[in-house]
Amino acid sequence: GAVVSQHPSWVICKSGTSVKIECRSLDFQATTMFWYRQFPKQSLMLMATSNEGSKATYEQGVEKDKFLINHASLTLSTLTVTSAHPEDSSFYICSARELDTEAFFGQGTRLTVV
Amino acid sequence: EDKVVQSPLSLVVHEGDTVTLNCSYEVTNFRSLLWYKQEKKAPTFLFMLTSSGIEKKSGRLSSILDKKELFSILNITATQTGDSAVYLCAVEKQAGTALIFGKGTTLSVSS
Image (cartoon, rainbow over all chains, first blue to last red; front, side, top):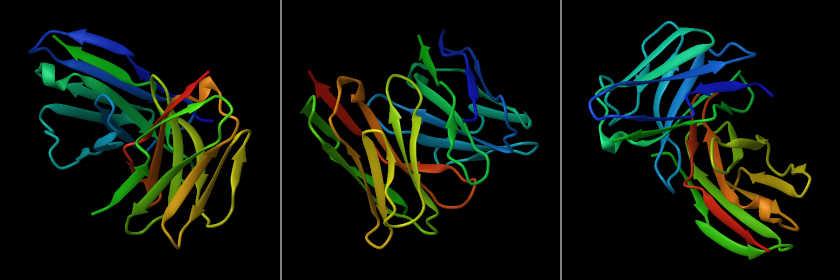
């Protein structure tokens, strides 16, 4: 199956700093990528839909100025958590899909803000 | 409002038991239903179901969809400790759109 690579796998940062998470589709072109957030023992909650070459579409309640998404190419989308706070600590997962196939997920990034 | 509901939320069984996980959904413009297994990291794909009544099988796992009653089941026979994980059900509304996930069923298999 297709491979989606997410980096880093885990990161610890100080409050007030920014963190960038990368999501790459390695063997296919993903015109659309999705960013999810998962709290412990909870399901995946969609944060935003990232479209190549255009602005991301954010779900209700997700601050677009705090969670900056860039999808500059067909194989790369980035999520930047700006001015991170401890409550932003979570597991962030990206996914990408080719039409009519299952969604492929990155390995996820566990963010801890201290 | 679209929703995907999984039951039970958690389940503890002994090795060798057979388990059935349930997923019901209410969405507009249903396209497909997917099952994923999540251990420590990102979900791994199990099945994608689009047609009613056609069982999909992979080893000890199988799944079927009922589009009339709006639900799907995931069966695991002869469970092993390695089956312990969170099983996620997700629904796709339109081609290429984000999946809507249920809260998952946490399965624990004891030896």
